[in-house]
Image (cartoon, rainbow, N blue to C red; front, side, top):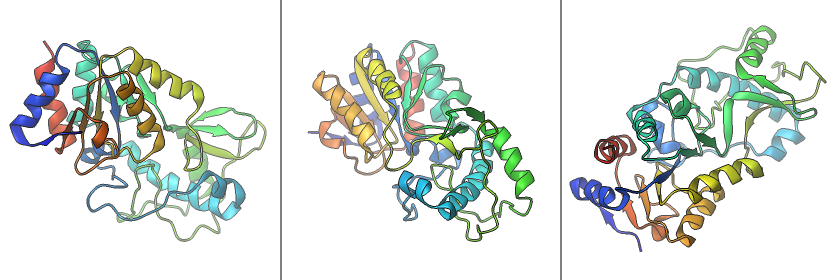
Length: 277
């Protein structure tokens, strides 16, 4: 069973568990909330259901709505900056405390903070893939095309941004969807939609990172998505100590050696300060 403790005892207990061990890290949306990117499931998060892959494929208006919202959301993503939690993980990797970071986030903030080995389980918003020929494009190039094709589309100050970079847009009928410049096929941000599976090679890279570590630290994830639970279960079966940092309950609490009901940023900073020799 997990043990929920608070304040200094929480940090000290986590340090005792993780000290002198190689620590694999799995992060979720909770690490990016201090960078201004919202959490789907955190306290006060608006109720919303992300678009599924079948919706995206099956209906042109759904694709218009997604691309219009994703374009506006990406503008906000580009403006977000890594916070001290991201920098703490980069410091721990540089010091050899952690071998790398597995993240469920698509915001790219770990890489921008200096983390060198990052496994983006659900992809990254800064790349776009053609669903016909597989050609990859830089998101900046596609964003420039959208600006030319849809000069009327602007970013309202009060737009609601989701953790996957989507935004609420009502008027989408006149939106012109970008297409692949190679084959004319449909484009999609290189992220895993609801209803899609994590690519096998990417999941294998995450599994290898855990296999090479002696403990697992989960930071800012409710573990509601199956990919996270699969990884924490792998660590449990290997009898690795598991520390979970998250505000509120997670689906991994009963599998954890220690559950810290605490803020992600300040806890990661405290752990980095203690664990780096």
